[in-house]
Amino acid sequence: MAAIIFAANPAAAQSPWPARPVKIVVPFAPGGTTDILARAMAPELTKAFGQPFLVENRAGAGGNIGADVVAKSAPDGYTLLMGTVGTHGINKSLYSKMTYDPQKDFAPITLVAGVPNVMVVNTEKARAAGINNVADFIRVAKANPGKFNMASSGNGTSIHLAGELFKTMSGTFMIHFPYGGSGPALLALLGGDMDVMFDNLPSSMALIKSGKLKALAVTSSQRSAVLPEVPTVEQAGGPALKGFEASSWFGLLAPAGTPPDIVSRIQQEVAKSLNTPAIKEKLLAQGAIPSGNTPQQFSAFINAEHKKWSQVVKASGAKVD
Image (cartoon, rainbow, N blue to C red; front, side, top):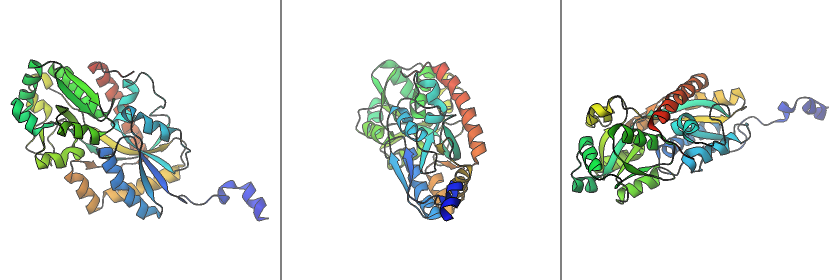
């Protein structure tokens, strides 16, 4: 009789979710903001659901490799993505070939946090070149066309596109070097191989505070509360950079078709953890602004971001084959 009941109702035979560890794919190398936020969320979700939430880094192609892995995973709640403005707002317009559709192949769960990018340079190298602010940087870069190297966390990331937008608006010519994440890109900047980076603020914060990197400007429309002395690119760059804005965001997504009740449960726990003083203060201290919005709100946000960045990509002329 039990066999007949389970055969007639397969759902009854399934274990409640989660019955085993859940994987959060970070589509960039360790050390960047995407990785930092995923590792901040994982222990909270582990405590909430009683199963390990494990972070797995799958870097490459501006986040497309890791995002594609999740898009093609079973929609059972056991594989999630820490998506970004790159994977879900920029890449579809930037890359000539995409193996996943950022809007159709995912079930948005929640926006975890938004952060400004920050224009950073190697402190010692900048001092030697006489660069103290954005105006100095533009002057020296224009005097040395093609001799400045710009690091990014990968093609198509907000870090890359913020730099491309800066190049276009400021009239500077720099060589772009994409890395597999903010971590290795920052190492190259610290080592003097790179000249500038438009990094996500959380992954550069400690290096700015230690004096190893100099923050010339933030890329948001307003100054950051954690770096109030640092101007925006628009404020520091003069008329040519009026209207400049290129901020980043990070959120959890599941493969399309993931049961709505699983998506809802994860969103509720993320929102709850983002409101705890420990997590909230930790993120704010790094320049990240916690969110935790609903799946419906996050979906609408992604659609708006895709529309916005497609226009920015077109205006910048950036393209990746």
